[in-house]
Image (tube, rainbow, N blue to C red; front, side, top):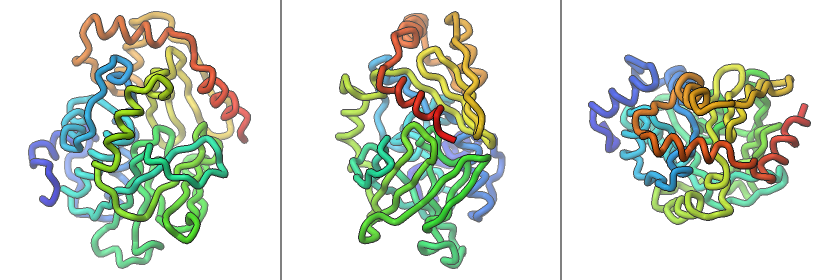
Length: 297
């Protein structure tokens, strides 16, 4: 085992993913692991909304996920990287940046991206046989993408990868997404590169993670999205199906049943605070982004 995860934690993490035996590293197994991760582990900011953002130590994140929690990119991709390394994959962490401007080619450091190589893959898949792997975008790909320039369709959703200027990295375009572009540098990164940005994202008054309660879960045909108390089902080429959650009971039932988020860490005061946050007026910027997304083909 090459990562910092104990065999017991690897087992608990895999059980969270519904995988009994992942088998040796292979392209098929890598795809199955990402599908299970985005389908069972939600992108969520509940602890940030409660004012107690968890740290981004990857082993700590793995323990949170194994216990039924979720997180955002630093937690989700940080933990998944350790799990993949424990299973024998070659993982590189990259500094990335997420933007609502499709023309942007900046890399701000507000996202952790991963590239993964399957031992023995032979370098036949573009950039030395690497795959772009991301469980931390919320509305990102359901399966890995070959790390090479190209266009892909997954469940009706369109994605592209293009090199950044001077081939210093890559630009991932999530066509039609509210944050359609994520750029990342090819150079390897460490978790220390994200520490300051994590503090800003989880504490600054102008951060979307602080302003708006959000939970997302991806599956083969679309995604479930909870923003505030508005639950949406988003699928390709159709208008989102939305409903307002009218009561706290309905709200927490959706968190557990739709998003698979365990609630045993939330006491009565936490639940009351989350419902208050969920019923706060929608953030105008995020509301505008949602409307813009609905105009996309």
